Length: 235
Image 1 (cartoon, rainbow, N blue to C red):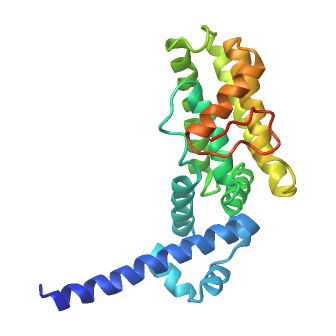
Image 2 (tube, rainbow, N blue to C red):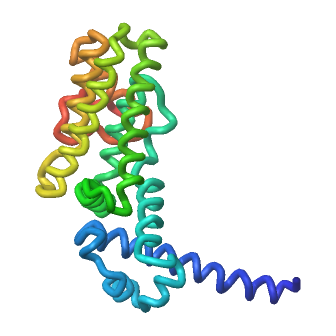
């Protein structure tokens, strides 16, 4: 293949990739605002400045587009937590909330799809259930890791599972409150809850835990959670 032929292949391919990204971003926005059934392919096409036929040519169907949107959401919504273990894994969720503050549309999408997925025939249901189970198992696994590393004393499996479910409920619930009222301190409230949980699990006084959390945030170049009671660390 000549350089000219290669350039001709790369050009249309690159344009197709960029168009696909724009369609997925537009669909994520409208699915988040209006739900899967409320956002039509035509409305998504209008937002991108293309045609309904183009969407179908890229994704096959509205359900295919939703799957692409959910894949995009998985990649974009949880970049901060996978590399940490034990108690650092739980502190990393403060960083995750900091990341989410600039991605309101992704949170709207998740919350909308979560509610709609209570219907067994909803196409997003398998993805949402998988996300819930993966998050839950990840928290339980990291509580076990914290026990094995000596960060916290042993605790019954039932308590680990209960505390994991409660932490997920707190984060999802505070995100919902923040979507409804941006004055809610999403990052600070999650930080306070994580600190309280670590203090309870480890038996460490809460003031010490807050200082440790502030130092952890500083090491990872994450600003202290606004409105939280974590100690301020000088960088």
